[in-house]
Length: 247
Ligand code: ADP
Ligand code: MG
Image: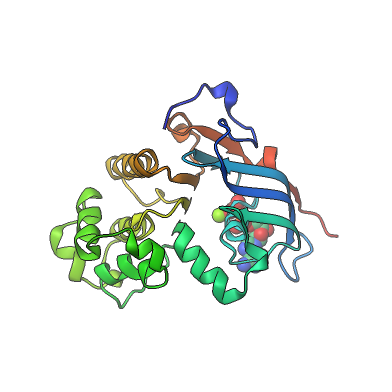
């Protein structure tokens, strides 16, 4: 990651000409039965190895945009391609597998399996993604290494995820996103439950993976103070039009 001058921020185009990992063209979405909120993203692209911070006020549609990119919801119109694949053209099953292969996901609510242990939670994406699995020589060692990097105690691997503190769960969710080096990491407010030191460690790890493996990182936060650490800052208001009145 090379910090860029802030004049380059708030732009919908990548700073480099490298192949785009993510491209949104004229995407529109309304939550079913919710005429009061609509999202329109005319043109947004993210390049390989770019680190992008997405800022925007609460309710501006950041999480909705991430769900569209992940293919957990499908745009009403327009096209979203991830690594050149039009995600709407895949069947639901193909999309689940594609997501597991291509995207390391950190949700706002972590989405860990509470009754499974930490190791199984971290290794979960590899079960559905053979290519991602093949990038890891020894999954158990890799999972333990990520935990160690993120400052989780050694004994935590066998603990049930639901018994951990919120901050520890967030780190497990981060390890699960990083394992197997997916080309795109998408993180929805991943540092909100971390103390300052752990937040710095987590971001360092994320950027190190981006540099070492060309991973693109798209992270949502409400904390504009993180801006300097990213290659590019995108403001929701600049890339998306939202409709919030009755329609
Ligand atoms: P942000 O992440 O920027 O706070 P969201 O994408 O969560 O914004 O929400 C944008 C709008 O979409 C809000 O009006 C919210 O109520 C609505 N919304 C979000 N998730 C759902 C959902 N699962 N079903 C219906 N409406 C939703
Ligand atoms: Mg949100």
